[in-house]
Length: 205
Length: 205
Image 1 (cartoon, rainbow over the protein chains, first blue to last red):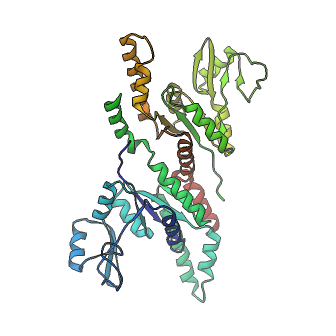
Image 2: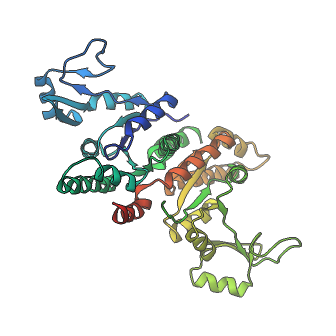
Image 3: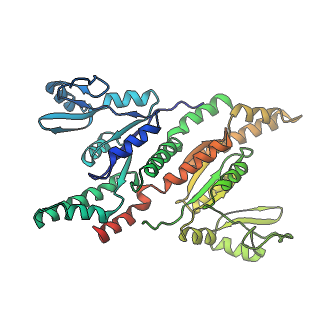
């Protein structure tokens, strides 16, 4: 009885935490969610489709969109741009679908600035000890490099402060359930739906 | 790995919306929730137990507790006080359990003032038309009385603004699932758990 806009959910977290695995497991279950499609300046590869794998743009067009604040976030890798187009996200939300974006921490912070009404979920490592061991015992690296890596991991985890929810990735299925609970409960928030209910009250009571 | 305080959840909504039914269905599933035990000045009936059915107090003691702001809400019915003791709620939350309180709208508003950190869930009638029909066709009442009842129903529903979540009671099992999602996701809110995660970071990384 209530018509509602979709919500943008952003899943992020430190490198190696398992964001991709959780996202895939979630999409294997939840078919109503739309995955945010990225825009890129890299060339289309055989088998890829415009608007399915990526939106493909020239470098010039991409830079124009950056200027017009038409990207929720973007970055440059190996001389190519990659980003999240605002228009696709907004149109999908308007049509009533939730959009799900899985992204590294720097990108998520850009989205937070450009789209603060999104819901930001931080995926937390199952064990800090394990993370530390992985960093410390990675090989024959200098102690300086190891300390730097620890510092970076720390910084990434401290970015948690910019997020709305924290989900520990100790078990993929459990993490998926928690994210589903977040998605469901965000749709029940009074501030999102009070207007429509009030309209119902005017019309029907 | 994270030690956490419990959360107080308040289920409320207009009279006749089915709060009691939803609460019972929820408690048939979710054994970790503690139901808030009320305090009363009415006499203990045969079979009732102190601290199980109610906390029993003299009128004098109850009024003393009111003065000391030791009740999250209270009301007087048929010359007896009924209320929600703050101490029981706070001790239960401290021990890590969530407390669940099902209460009419006026009581919920008192709790909101005395315990704003609670999570307030508004149960919305499945159909406003049905609610209206029930009020209009209730019998041989005067038109003034009917209009008054409609006005009151409206007012109760407008109190929705004081709540965090709105759940439609169109199906009891579905309403219970939504409330469970709210409970789960509230525990994942960054602001509730960031402190403990930060401590973990200090200790382990």
